[in-house]
Length: 217
Image (cartoon, rainbow, N blue to C red; front, side, top):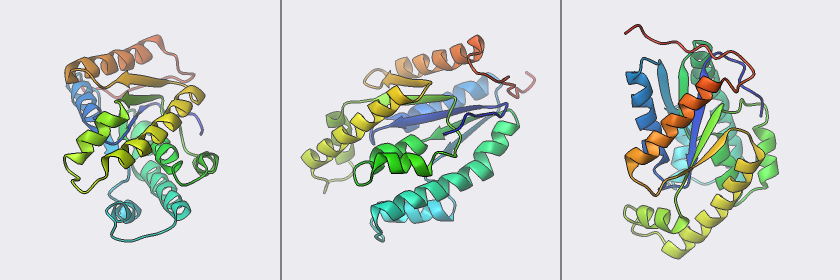
């Protein structure tokens, strides 16, 4: 993937289903907005046409091959970047995405070659910061079981173990990956996340000027 050259800051949240990453993304958005930053909270799959097709597949409304599904994810991501992410980064905003390409690679590795999935995502920008919320697969599976009674707990746990191993490989391969312990109090987790964001902004570790748009207080 390619570096973000736009003035805004791009943050992605990743994690297993049931890890609470979505909640942390929402909390971060609220905190930064209160501090005067212009923030866009977005997600993948998107609410666009292709994203709707993907959600239909995930809810078993229709079927396709694993490879076709990954191509749909890539197409949805392309539209996501073109319509939401890049315009807002160019405007100097903080863009927070609940899931991004690393979800496709990690979950997609269950059925596809992860190197191929990386290849079809290589022209997309990489987040400046990726938060990987770590919660044990067994706990995530138990949380999911609460709303999916028909789910086979052992099979789901084994699947999530494989997904997590891929996430760990990606965290070692790509820069600015932060693994966050998600088995703590909600406010402890978000405080660590906020500290990382402020540290990244303050130290200026990026190779371009970050010019965030802030409201006048």
